[in-house]
Length: 182
Image (cartoon, rainbow, N blue to C red; front, side):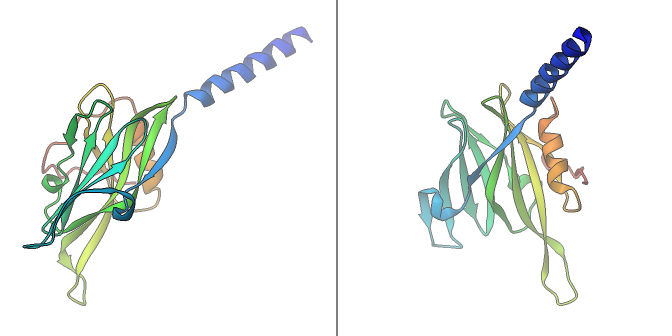
């Protein structure tokens, strides 16, 4: 009987440690109406820079020019890191409405957000095709950077979270075409 109680207690403690070690998600808005406008110029195709609240004293800058958007990560010390989304995709683009922050304990360790890109191939009606990728960026001791790009498909969100939670991925090379599929 005593062995069963000890075994049960061990299992409960092990499960609690396992669950507490899993990353969780916290969301923040990337909608222009909920972000602070830092710069806006409607002339010549328009440009915009907005600062959006993040998690754990991180902020995100949304930058738009020539109908293309990109994101900068601003760390808790105020240092800015460019994710260079324009260099990964050249077409017209827009960032999704929210950011998913992957949290370990109380510390943000990764960022996931939707990135909608107009592709070169047109559909039968002659309109550009828009592809909605999930961008994964690692945060922490190293310079924040895009580590994974997940194509649309069944399981896209779960795949992005799995990649975000894995211990280490190298920064994606600019212009690299290797994209994770769900």
